[in-house]
Length: 390
View 1 (cartoon, rainbow, N blue to C red):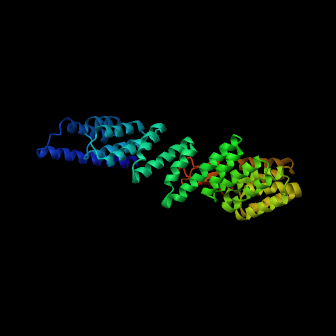
View 2: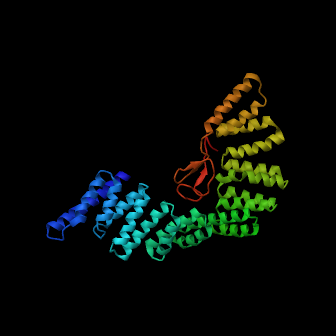
View 3: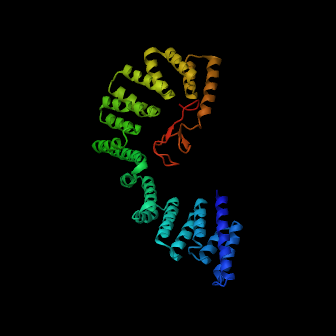
């Protein structure tokens, strides 16, 4: 990509050189020092010496309507290459020296805000964008998107909601309503951490109002009810996840088991619910949770049969290690030693494997993120299913 951009920039630079030469040949104003030193900048560019090329272009190449594209292309190239300080210099130079239309100035300031954002200078980026959102049309909407990214990075969820409200129009309304549902979930979790359950409920009510099908809302509600000792309500909330998106049921299992145990609720009811979930989403996490219940009631042999039956239909390494553990307890001598070796191999196969993956960008990791660290999508990360996953 950088080579392609360098090619475009070089073509633009050559075109400007042709124009400067043509102007001089036909009796126009001599290209003087700027025109002469322009060729030095082009030479540095062709030799892939961006530092000297930037210095030459900024110092000697006048910024006007004819040279604007070259300056912008150079700034864009530097930003994509990660040379953000130089990109800032180029874009600031345009604003300081150019006599441009108001529309073009807005575009350049937007580019400068992008430079600041990528450089992690969030305060500077925010300062520029707060002014740009006073514009109209494309500039305003793009500025709002960048501003939203800043507030998400800073975890300033209230400000993020204000911006998302302005963006939630037309075809993108569903996208931003879903994002706001997560913002309110974040606020609810923060209130819960600070022992403010009523404020947490208020925030969660807003989250559900934005997107009732967001499984995270049921997960957070289950946590709120559990902390309040309302165990049956916690169970009801957590069991809604299977209707919203069953692939997230494994994320609720620890809370669900705690609610049943602390509330002394029917284990048969929990088992029935988990079997229903397993029919919809074959998940080894659900299998292992069911195995605990079966072991308590029917013993190791019944558990072994249950796990083996599931593995025949949906083989997973996690299931295999659990099955090995059951047999190790009843093995002796060489058989026990061989099973231990087999278990070590099975564990090694999944030791460094991710458990979650983003369906949008492919980011993966061992920890669940509701907000993808890579593409910044909400609810795009899902448990990995298959031999090395669920």
